Length: 156
Image (cartoon, rainbow, N blue to C red; front, side, top):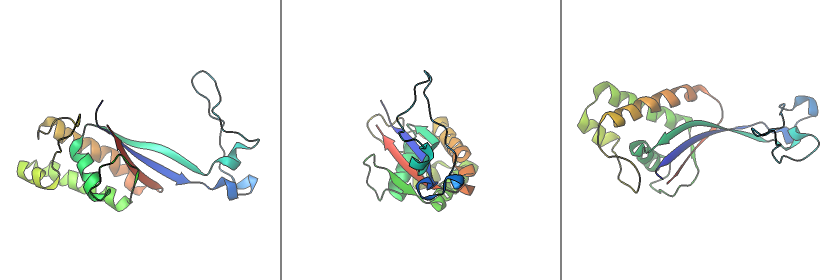
């Protein structure tokens, strides 16, 4: 149990509206036992419209979660799925980088505070906090240049 946080990227491919020779090629997905997933139809490509990728994952990084709740979710912490504009990912990266350069406790408490919650992890501004910011930069910085729609969702 605990706070799990996901950032996914959805890329629209629109195969249902393309001519067969223009469709994005899709291989029938199988699990580790060789069992096919239930995508039906003679031509699988006709049924694929969006590809979803898991691009970032955090565990009990409550300061990052609080940032998403405040800046993306309008203050509503409901485990919903929320669209994240690329500019906001860039804002979060810039904020994390600013805090990492200074490592100023008061600035961190003001700009990216920790948040208490049921199984949300520690609220100290310790090495775990700073490592979380470093990992956030590593995960998100490359995504800023990618095309697609990003969505944040949490669960606990």
